[in-house]
Length: 447
Image 1: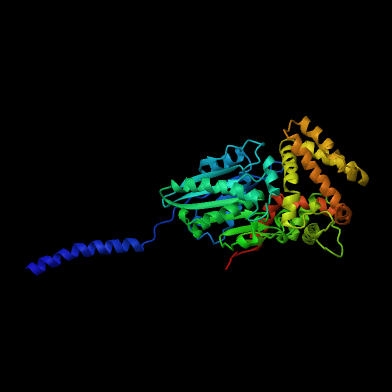
Image 2: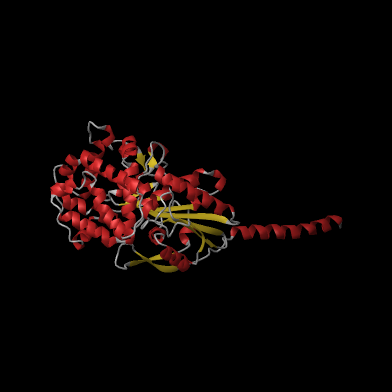
């Protein structure tokens, strides 16, 4: 009887055990969140594109490429360009903005980039999204030229470090599993590369590679070659005609993390060129198409020699010592002018184009460049440091003098090739190329 009574006790235990075992084998239903949203394309006449937000990609390992998440990421990185557009983007997705840098509306800061962190909480996890301003970043343009003498390009690394510290702080406050979504375009893409490496190398953040989703577009090379990691979850989209994505050059010892997707398509770019009413491409023995012309330009620029060492940019050290500060400051000033007064910049370009070749050359002599620029800045109330601007104009004049023969050889005779280069870096071009790439590639798999 005692034995029988003890055996009865086994049945409740077996019931509990079996129940637990059965519940663990039944997959938990995935949460859904499907919606469409419209994203403005910067530098267009109010053109937009539609992208899809779905949770499916975030349930997959981040090394699994998602076309939906790629297009959405392009939209995210473009929306982050302005206060109003990123606010709308997050409202459409019902994300909460948990951090936005205080310089989103400032054109004065050269110190760090405008960036935003959004959050959305689901049953099983939290998504933290981060991007930085990729258009209209004014004086932050100057940091594009700050490469430094060693390590990852310092103008990008400093901002990425600030983003990393803020992201790390936000991650530490979360109670659920965290999935991180990073996306950038152009300068912002380089920042996301630098940031992604910091996140993945920091074991204290407890963020696995499978939960870090990184989609970048037309990023310049800012990672020192010896630091490069072939992360399978960092997807870099670029087209082979884009000059910006080739800089800093490999001869400076710079490269990119992650895997590379060349989204170039001749049919798409030919149509863009035709719509832009550009003249036919001029080939030579050294180049037969735009991609080869870009490669040739960079090669000549970085191998050019002169008797004066302080005039060269044929190595990383030479560029850092001779040009990074001067070219950086004037780029920031002109970026600010273009952001707020694009008509003024167009007027400047038209004026220069009306000059004869000798007048153009003379513009880069004896402080004439400073005297040419400042009336436009004063008229449009763009603040500048007179000492820095004069020094910057001196740097431009030094470059123009040192590289005049090279310009006359590879730029002036091929001016029609040169003037079309910016269109290959435009957001609209990237969108059209990405769309065509997705249409013509059924499965995008990286091993």
